[in-house]
Length: 517
Image (cartoon, rainbow, N blue to C red; front, top):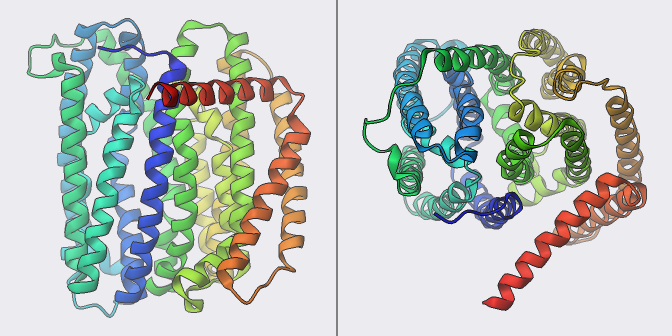
């Protein structure tokens, strides 16, 4: 089997993720535009609501996915085939049990759908049937998740990226055709379920071919101590996952309950844009996760910290740029793609951009906490985050609607994991004070506000007869100004030098491959 360096795997994972997702995003936007013209806003609300409900059901996964990847780093680095096979067999059993649990709980939720949707939508389909299709889509994925995790731990996320992006593009094209010529939402939902299953089957087959020794049931069972260690990590991740889901997966439920499915559907167009941007940026961090895990396993704290600072700078750079662009341009993009009736106040665009930045700025921290196995620190704090989020979101939602609900998420994060996650990483991962991290974070925030204000001030005067041309000009402004400012601010730092070297190596590798071709 061909072995590559960490840098080569990172480049492969990143390139496959970016390349495929850009095409996927463009086709997906066209599909969404067709959706809003064929189906009513209630259907958008249903899609967003079921997504949140089923995310809540994934509590049953209890963080096993992260535990899998962490446990596999060392045996993969050592090429210990027996241990890899044993871990994969063990996790396969766990995920099959999870699938059954999620199915049972998912079916038990059906009688309570009327309590969540207080105002029944004007649709012809039975909500329970649509929900069951979504539930099947969720449950089926658990039968393949452990093989996906093996590829991720082995730095081969590019296999998942290429497969899923190609299939999603085909899926969107099929959906567009069926929406235009059939116009039935239940058919639209079945297409999603079919292509999701197809993706899982293909990726699982790739995993078996890459690692043929995981097939069959001949692997030795894990030792008792190993199971205890895994169980300890899973217990720590369980509470963390519960808190994260209660913060991230309740907004649409609260919006539906307080404001109705129509508002949920309208808000989901904004979250579609922010989620698409997040997905593109998260490709970077998913691409480097396994490489960081490998680096941490082989290097000392000084080297780990140096790389962390560089990744953290990249983290800020990307999310600050994206958040500024989203705040300034998103309302115009919604008006262009879906029409003025789907616009929300500018305050909603601002709070979504703020949440996107706050969550995004945690990526570097979470990458290191996960790859260093620091699962148990702060596991109870996330429950406080969830409690604050629910109380504040409901209270502010009754006063300020969608803006108040989303503001509750930002407030809960600011009071808890925004500061504790880096604190625990520095204390238990690097063995030092996090004071310099927080000073750097504050400096990043000041730079973001100043740069964003300049971009907003300039763009507020831009208005052409062509809305598309207006958007293009604003995107250019929101791309040029932040990057010029950030280069001026960080060009002499060690972290910038590390990032610059990586980019140059990336370009050189691509150039050399093109010359050979």
